[in-house]
Amino acid sequence: ILREGTRDALRAEVTTERRLIVDLANGGEDLADPDATVVEREGARVHLRFDPAVTPAAELIGRITARYPVRDLFVVSPPIEEIIARFYEGEANA
Image (cartoon, rainbow, N blue to C red; front, top):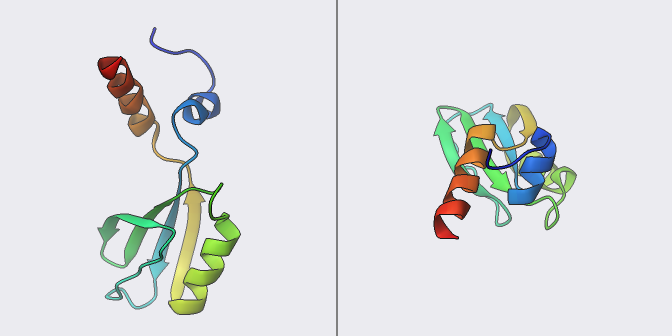
């Protein structure tokens, strides 16, 4: 066993990062924000990585919706697979 705890506790050990997933109404737009990094694009859907300790989700959402026509959006934590991979990376570097 590498680590033990709840999913949220394990995530907190590795990162505070969150994801904002935005479905753009006009799929071809090049969505960008200085406090977020695009990690994936799937047609009109854009996945952004951000740190809510630096930029609260509500602030980022407000800026995005003010600049781009948005059909839908939601905030999620990084996938647990990424969290586990980061634990293994940390162990390999230890």
